[in-house]
Amino acid sequence: MKVPPYTEILTDSFSEDFALIVAYIIESNISANYDIEFAIGKTEQFEREVKDLIKDLTLFPEQGVIYEKSSVRGKPIYDGRYSVRWVVNHNGREISLIAIHDNERPKDLRYKNAKSDT
Image (tube, rainbow, N blue to C red; front, side):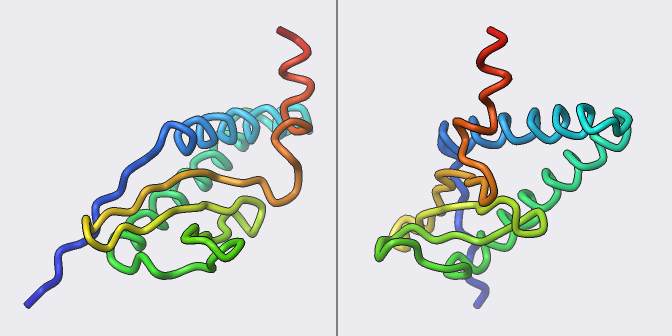
């Protein structure tokens, strides 16, 4: 008998982190004098890695590491630059994706220039 996959839930904070990281990848590559096609290719790589991880999580939600003695699990993506975080609800067969952390720069420093322009 085949076990049905878990359902993924994208929280607002996860979706916000995702959008900010995509914008940051484009901005940082363009400011480093790469062309827009290269920058878009890097965002597509990031999006593909997130999508592939989510697909894997629906089948194997216990992968990754547990953070801070809690129920939050995580796994690095994009050559270890970012870490996707999630919580598993076995009773409801759900995976709640809660955040994407930047393992190199805190969010407040990463977007410091963008925030000062507004």
